Length: 279
Ligand code: SAM
Image (cartoon, helix red, strand yellow):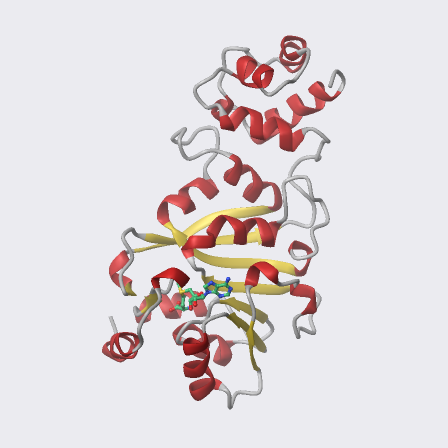
């Protein structure tokens, strides 16, 4: 831990309601900011007091930072406004079209210790809905390094072989549009104030094409099989109103007694394709 960061963070009255947990661990701050190189344009979501931001500014071509807290914005303006490659914008990430930000490059990197109270909305906003092949935000991004709660990180990278509570629609959405990897576990002691749980950094390498073909019924199929987890796949699909479930399962060779969390992304895609013939 770096005393300088601890003191700067303690001087500021952190707002729990905005998910303000500031990173105070030098090694982690360096680890994250080293994903920015001098060829990159970076979007930082929630720069806070700017501990990561100051290093991103040094490492990269251009940093655009979105922050909604006026008190944090004052600190950032005092400390960082002299840098020509830094653009601080008071704006909610969830209301932002990344294409309208001051970037020159076709594709950018996002590096962020995100506010945890809106983790899922942020991921959906950046990646798009599962059936949105051409989401405008995603097509502007080449890579994202995001700090999330460890439990969420495990859900993002989970597959049909993982602990079945972890694998679900967040895993499917993330992996449909990115290669995902947990690159560092970050203990809660690395933050001030310290959150209740440990965190992890997840690297998303954004794909140009979705991992499988997107069928019309994919989103509905995913919702059906993961929202009634204790039911077998046949019952889950029937409850959701799908017709000819038995025939579709048989066609793609999936046992009707299997549960959704035992199916790979490819199996789910094939199943939704088969269901399309009858629904
Ligand atoms: N980047 C800093 C760090 O690592 O120490 C702060 C990270 S803190 C977890 C999250 C930051 O996101 C806070 O500064 C908070 O004010 C900001 N924030 C919260 N909601 C936001 C939103 N909707 N859009 C943009 N920033 C937001």
